[in-house]
Length: 177
Image (cartoon, rainbow, N blue to C red):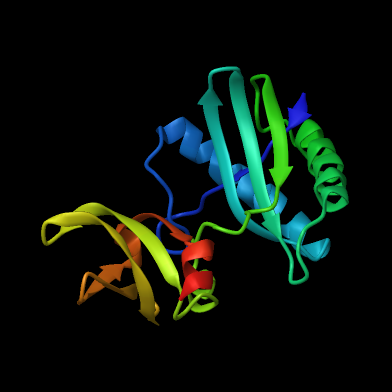
């Protein structure tokens, strides 16, 4: 099996798209196993995906650290996590393991992810409509424990973190502002 990574926790600490109960159970076990190992390696698990794609099941990890992630970091974490998963035997179907950086337009999952991009342009999709919209692209104005405020189209929108389906930094838009 070749390694691949994906991250999702409960809605109180991580945002994630709804998934099948068995898939959610496997994902929770993967996080429980992988996150402590990454922390001891000085890395942060930004996101974890475990999903079926056209070529089969993929476990995708997005990792980061303060001074950035290199290809060597990804290869090293792939070896460590691959060995861990082989021993733990959590995934009982063939899968591919992928490890990568979250990229410039990184996903935003936790309150501290949002805090680190305060004042920059973000794109947020909510699980439910707020007013008449679900997509918001604008300046992140405020981050609270359970909500964020995004200023777009001349208006402030307060979005509960439990309603965020997905969010990401719009790096190049932020560079222009």
